[in-house]
Length: 444
Image 1 (cartoon, rainbow, N blue to C red):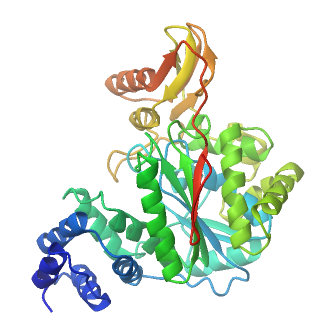
Image 2: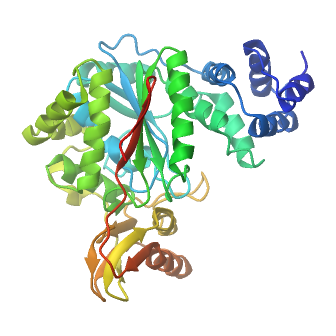
Image 3: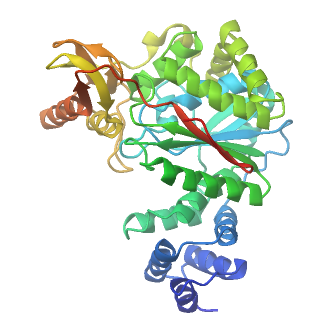
């Protein structure tokens, strides 16, 4: 078997066998298939696509390329949640304890942020003392005892995906549904979950800009999960404006705590109830979405979910007092206001511009080596549909010491992110569709 023959086969529209895909992936990890041949194969995939069987084989082979987590010692059905990435997406911080408080164990490995999308691990690290590194034994023991753990991904989870993603990033081969789907699902399968809920973001602040693209990606991922024996469902949600009001690590933790206390932005609470309901159904503790949602609402109102967040923080070395006193979280030395220059109604908020603005202030990374300022970020004071008068504050920029040029650029981006019109308007629906093995159920 030769790599050049497999490249030619895919270039000409052929279907690779599981053994042929295994040859390519194992050879790439071992160094016997060089970058230039793997990039040629990836470009052939971009042009020719992959069959569902090929995509499933690629996913499994990447999952097997490194460590795989066995969650078998933990009782119950373990359900994982994955977001395809957005701006202000702090759902895991409140969704994980909410779902765990309702009886579904959550054993979650999360990533760090890069670019304009934030990472759950960076956000949790803004909590004083919180440890994101646990041994495999500590991880399993904590989930068994508390029903919940959130840690950073192991360095040897899906090394084939890390190599292939880095190659795709510099060879213009990122935009391929089979390659995106297999990248996401290989990590989820290697992490050991029994069932998976996918939050597929759609809109200007997401990777998938249109609903049709997002449905195609969701269908591919659900098919992969089903084919490898993991019950999988995808919820397609809007990222045409940031989720909630806070963008930035400590700011988002503070907002998650506020939401668990019964306050917080309506869209953040609604999304967590929607995703959480599907997790409870897949986890076998509720018969349908309606009863699952009612159970989650009770866990919120009773304070059980908030108590579970305290448990998580204490178990991983942090100070649970931060839940009662969020002022313990890092805060910025300066807050700069972005004001409306005219009156009207907010008709749009470009999430990606605000994500980049937060990154420039220190809340995100341009490269993997960049340090994070946990206090930096952006807080929205208006959302789509809100009426504003000239001079009203649209957003606040939280910043410590940064080069003035970066602060000015962040201010410019924040101003440009808001679009106003003279007529009243409504925001896009929060949830567009549900994709499962049974098909696509459109909600909007």
